[in-house]
Image (cartoon, rainbow, N blue to C red; front, side, top):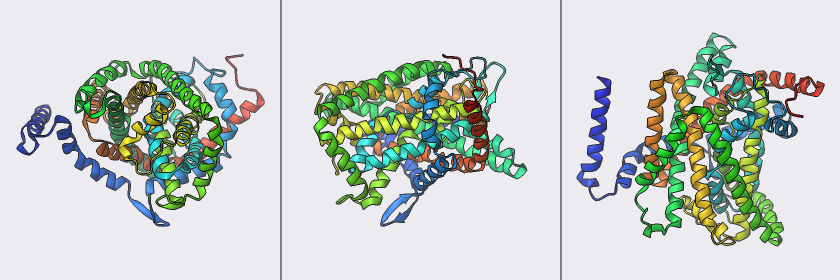
Length: 510
């Protein structure tokens, strides 16, 4: 009976979209946007409530992320810096444990998580931050990335600590499990509180997987493809739905295979495209090496004395931190879901590996993008927030004429890898709410692929609003739970660090 009702409602909605006279002159893309925009605006208004500081409205969720990252950094005595060397040893396989529960190696888990963060936030988001906040926004992006490393360490350690391990060798982990199971260890009242936080996180994550992990990616990659094929004159203009169908088919072929299939693809795509993108940036920087000192001078000067920038110092800090937070998602909890699939008996090992995620995403890739934009002088204070990819493309094109085509391939592949990673995040939250079953699995995957088409067809304003809102909303239940579970992480870290220093850890690679 429910199935018939849902089918009837779906047919009615489709009929309304196609037949309403007021929409008759609109394209299919415009109709989809008109249907979804009101809901997206409503959600955005709630999540991004603000409070004033020095005349600038600061989103409360941004302050929530910054404060948590700073507290975690001091609580764990700058683990973001002192564990980097050992993190590299873990990533390259020095301490792999193939007999441990889990489905992927440390490197594959990191690559999967990176594929969910390294992408359009680094390309489009950085261009917007530098344009609206000036070169000084780069400084705050880097600082946000360094602090965010401690948030990743905390949530990914907890993700492995409280994951579910099944007889067939598969695992399910992430904030929804450590919020419910971890807080339950503190007593019945905390158990109920943790369950509420877990359910809220799962709901927000599912929304984030459809938004920032899906629609935003499809939208911006389509925009870049249209841009390099002629802009408004391109035969693809207005055919976002067609691009969406093609991408949905490609994504569908990968996500059917689960985390192992996703890890195989991301462990190849992410390193390849990161090397191509970073190499192109380095080439441009080296070709303009004499301009680098002036660029860094502008970054540091602009960070503390942003003359002429709207909002002054606070405005610049806001642009840098907000773009960094959206790019690396530290504190959001999403990456803990991917890292939880790692093969290990020591949860803290994956927390240490996770330190590299914000470092690579923000400190390395975002900084290179910002330097290219500053050196080439292509940043524009009057930029339209929808033109982030095009602005970065113009910056690279100014030195490498054919680079927009390479960037287009990078954008599409980065978007593709992000989508398949976020499909896994959303799926794990979906099955947490509705149970581990084949029906729940395929229902979610069908919905995810449908949103690929919707995202390709929507105007960017609605996509950005919904994307940011759902992803940032995950930080509220996630970080609240993390505060209560900090002593658990500290015990795990102290025991592991003592074993490491005493030489009690078995090396699997000479």
